Amino acid sequence: MQLLYCPWEAASFVFISSNVPLLINYSHFIAIFSALAVGLLIFFNNPKLIISRLLLIFVILFSLWALLDVSLWATNDPALVMFAWSMQVLIEPLTYAIAFYIFYIFAFKSIPNFKLNLAISFLLLPLIILLPTTYNLESIALSSCESIEGPIAKYYTYILNLIFIILIFVTAVKALRITEKHRRRVLLLFVTGLLTFLLSFTSGNIISSFTDNWTISQYGLFGMPVFAFLIAYCIVQFEAFKIQIAGAQVLVVVLWALVCSLIFVESELLKIIAGLTLVFTTVAGYLLIQSVRKEFEQRKEIEDLALKLQKANDRLKVLDKMKSEFVSIASHQLRSPLTSIRGYASMLLEGSFGKLPKKAEEAVEHIEKSSSYMASSVEDYLNVSRIQAGNMKYDYTDVNLSQLTKNIVDDLRQQAVKQGLLLTFKSNLKSQGIINADIGKTRQIIHNLINNAIKYTPHGSIKVTVYEKVHPKRILVDIIDTGVGMSTETIEEMFNKFERADNAHNINTAGTGLGLYIAKKMANDMGGDISAASAGEGEGSTFSLEFPLKK
Amino acid sequence: MSEKLSKILLYIILALIFISVTATYYKTIVQRDFEIINDLEENLTE
Image 1 (spheres, chains in turn cyan, blue):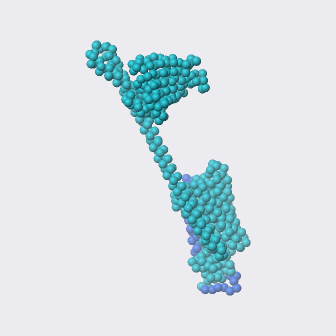
Image 2: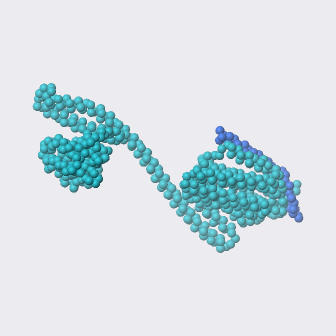
Image 3: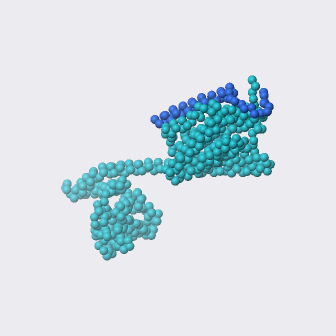
């Protein structure tokens, strides 16, 4: 059987032939290299994502198309030309269809509906069915080894390409309208890269097909590095595929491929320049990848730590709530029997059950004193749990703060005198000094502050002064003692839970460290505040309680 | 449902592509069943 061949030497390994111009190698292999770099890196970084898989199929099909094209230039076998040409006719619109699906999924994060899929399938059907027939390729001219295209190859494939480009454009317009600002920029870059490639690819092929000058179509392939570059940029800048390191790698690989390809250019000087640039790019690329990797790892570490902290914080909140609930329940259980103990101890001391022997009276006095302290502690714990649970209730009424303070001072004077202290009260008010507050809680706060002053003043005096400030209109109660005083560090922390002054333990061993915390919280809740000042340890202290005056 | 139908459609298209590619390969490479326009003055023969 006599076989006819085109008039040049047969290609070795299908692609290598002196018949292939340098421009073909230059345009095709850069495009294949950059496409595969992007596709493979994205795929291996996130193989489960449907968009990664589609992108991989897209770049594989494109690379196949480009390889078939090189083989068309290299081979002298008409049969291989007819087959490769047919495959190109099939692959080209399929690449466009996949490009549309990639963009659709990227923009809307879902696949198109069945109707659209059906319409696309019907569009592809004539191409698939008529591929082996003469409607696709009619014949081959031996002198040029080029196929004579039928209506499918000459018109229908290009119509399909244009339809898919229009579909991508329409999808982009629709998606850009509904996406938020940050993502809009990513979409815009992505669609610009995609359309640049598809338009340059298809226009090159259409012009070549109609002019029979197939060199023009080679320029269309330069759209692929642009597409690869923009995708890589999207990855690095906007974490489009959540693989920033891979994005930086792609950027470098594409740049490297571009520079490397310059070696194909026939000029000694250009080769030297390209070589130097290659070294520079490799070093710069390595540094870029390293820095991006470092930053990415650091950020990931911080994010992980923040997440752990968040979890620990949530857990602590739950535990704190549980603790408060436990304290509340336990304190309620303790309060009832304590009331009973105190009541009976008091009755015993009053002689309700007959006269007690002297020794028994002393013992009962101890019981009464200790149970009173315990009742006060239980009350503190209950208040703390109420504050933490947000259950503290306030019954607001008009309170004459000056009168209230005077009454408390009168109540506590006997205790002060017992300790050899001088407790005085002075009012410098010009108005009536009425505030809107819960009278019981306000009483508790003032009682606590003066009681503390008595406890922590071994000798000297305690002055209680009530006065008002005009701007803003507030009323203040100052409790100034000549007691143990406090350091600056102690002042800063003393309103925290369970905090006591360093020297407090020496004087009063029984304190819970909750009194000031509760007092300040209650004052704050009622619109007031408590502050403390001291010149230092042994220099006495001043506690100021303030409330807004009722207008 | 729409996703399932789309999947079936995809398999049909893939099957058709496979058949079409096989047929093209058989016709061009195996059978060499296509018209060659011999526009050379001297044909290269093997």
